[in-house]
Image (cartoon, rainbow, N blue to C red):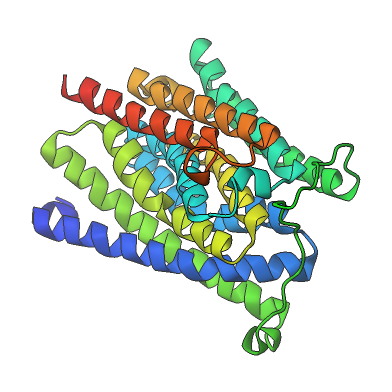
Amino acid sequence: MTMLEQWSMVGLLTGFALAALVVLFSGLRITALADTLADRTGLGEAISGAVLLGAATSFSGTIVSITGALDGHASLAYSNSIGGIAAQTAFLAIADLTYRKANLEHAAAELANIFQAVVLIVLLTLPLIALSLKEVTVFAVHPLSLLIPVVYVSALVATRSLKEAPMWKPVSTRHTREDTPEREDPATRRKSNLRLFASFALLMILMGLGGWVIAKTAAEVTDRLSLSQSLVGALATAVVTSLPELVTTIAAVRRGALQLAVGGIVGGNIFDTLFLTAADVSYREGSLYHATGMADQFWTVTAILMTGVLLGGLILRQRSGPGRIGVESLALLLIYVVAIGLQATNSSG
């Protein structure tokens, strides 16, 4: 009998909630650090959002997927990753609601974010390709899982080149917010880059510990209540571990770091596909993809659909739509709510 099996249901839910708070409040501080490091390193908000902020806010989710896979919960590990992508994309629409000057996708014009969205769609098709083929593994890992990090790193290199020598540039309007370095407050200015990165790493560790607790308690609650792993992964652990993205995105919007906000979501989503590689390596019973069900793949298709809608919004750049947000933001929220309803209905049916 494991230690968690001796806990009461109230204790499990309390542990889950406390871990969620650790993840949430760690994410609050990390936004300002990512914005400062973006300016100091010259990476720019879009790339910093994709690499620093995306990786940091996704770290707890990575731990959830790895822990779930190690414990043999393939569906939980998979749906946590893909469900997080869908949730985070919907969070960008919520952030659009908080930016009242114009449609967020219009104001945060940045070619790097458009390219990253294309890469995300490509990465999301790989699990579907793997599932459509006969199960083949190398040391219990599907070969396509090894391709995901290769595509990820290649995309980062291409994004950097895109920033340095863009072949396309968005039209600048009075609503367009340029990515310009901001003046640091005196306390931050006195800190070296090494100290800032150390603080960044410490916050990531805290978020990772929070993710481990979330995975363990969620798996135990799932077993006790005989809940669907896919439902818990996509709508419980994924949403909770994605809360830092919601907080950091809104915080970035309020700081005026619009490219960081969009880049943090899109880059975080790309980083989330690495969960699949980590989970497949951790899952020792064969291919992770072939151990999942149709309910898990439903979220893969939903994530692709939502990313396509977001990409369209980034290209179209509607200045203002209903409620001063873009039509794509309304569509993203609608798709996500309908997806939740369909998943809940199918799981209970």
